[in-house]
Amino acid sequence: MAMRQAVLLLVALATPAWADTFGGFSGVDRPYLVNSDRVCTPLKIAGGAATGVPACEKAAADAIARLSFKDPIPQRGTKAAFAATASGKTIAVTKKTGDKVVSWDAADPIVKVVEVYASQYEDRVAVAYTMRRMGKEVTEVIAFDLGQGQTAIREPDQPQQPTQPQQPTQKPVEDPKLVAAVTAARKAAKGAKALAAWKAVLAIDAAHSEAMYGVAAAQMAQKANADALATLGQLAASSKPDAIEWLIEARFDAAFAAVRSDAKFRQLVGLDRKPATVYEKVMGFGGQWEQTGTSCDKPEVRMTTLRDRTVKIRVKTTCEGQVYDSGFKGTWRVDGARVVLAFPNKGKVTAQDEAPCTLEAVGDETGLHCSLGKDIEFLVLPTRR
Image 1 (tube, rainbow, N blue to C red):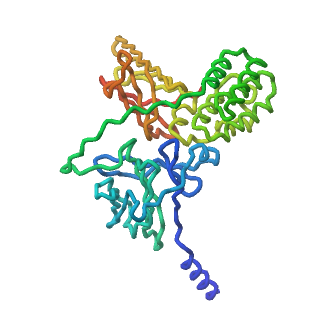
Image 2: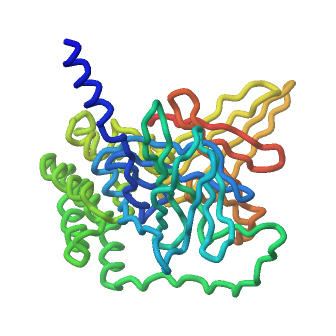
Image 3: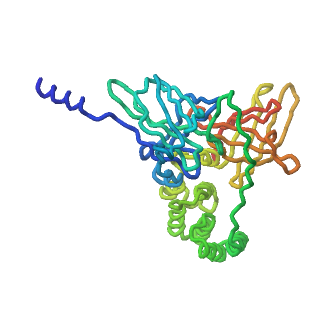
């Protein structure tokens, strides 16, 4: 028995250290992949530093596929854009020019930096590093979000060089035949005419997300439920970034009411899994949000976000018999790990017309904490449709 225990101890000591692996950055959103199933949000940088630990969630294979993770780009040799060093518990990331990008403190002393990775557009950077934990070396991955178009943060005593203003990005020219076919399909009546119209769109663009959704809805109208589920399966397997938007739309469309309790339908549209992206967190329960008001303390808020990126907000405050009721109409967009609301003034939007919202955990829920200025601040929770 003593010999057996000694052998088991030697085997345990010889077991290789547990290690995380970096799976790349999303090509359609901000997250990064750790191992093969953990989707994480990179840390934001403020004043050249990042704090805390990234939020990570296990995700299903279909959710990971929709995020379109790109192969990691190791930063090595003369072509490296970033470098990282470790001292004590601190990791420091710099540009190859020496400009500081970010510093971050880990919970335990760091043994060494294993590898540094950059996203395709150098707007995110990840560091694999080892630390000692319970007598063993373990490898972990931390990533940082430099922001859209931002690749480094200079020290205050190093003035930024003036940059040339960027030319506005031109939208790709759409195929006129495709535009005409989609317009006609949207106007088509339900049933056979709608089915034929949306199939005409797919004949031009076989991966058109809205067309696949339209075909599935038309098939449901003809009570061809199995065909509709098969079409939704094609939509769920699509690599198009907007495919998830139409899958979420299907969750609440009355056209699919007959299969809403069907396990296959719920799996395809993701009804019973946790959201993997910011868009899913915003729209996953139908885009209805609310904050319960309290007299003279907290306003009652009703907010509706729609797939077309419009938003409506109603803020009602009651105090000592006085009622103040304000409405806002605007747009919303995903900006990294946050949501930005915009309220145009005479058709134009400036920075002063935008309001940031952050996603915050509230018990088992995910809430949106928004500040509209003028002392209007609220934390709304999703309302199930």
